[in-house]
Image (cartoon, rainbow, N blue to C red; front, top):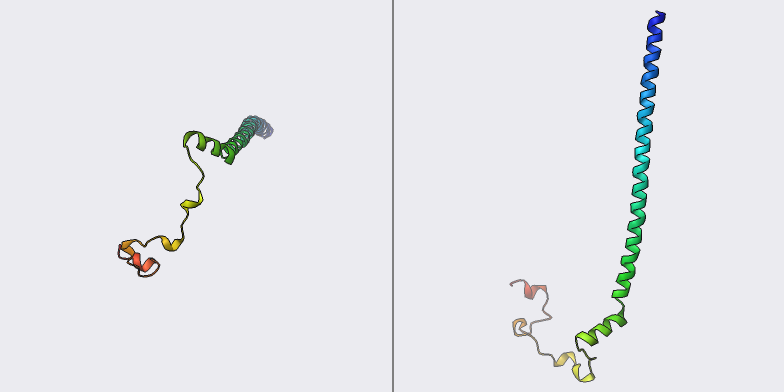
Length: 108
């Protein structure tokens, strides 16, 4: 009986040692993955900050105005280009029957 008890205690000790070694290895692997993910998150946060700064620079109204003047030859609208709303004729397909709501467009 003593031999069986000794054998079982040795087997349990070996199994426990193997389990602890496996757990230690898995813990180190997961810690390495966590560090790698933290570094990736930090890089992505930096990339996001850079992209936001680039977007802010690209959408700057003064920059857009300079580019429009240089490449599109646009000029500001003068007062002669504005008219009263009543001076604009109605489209023929609306027929002058109301404001052209959803009921007028239902048949299209």
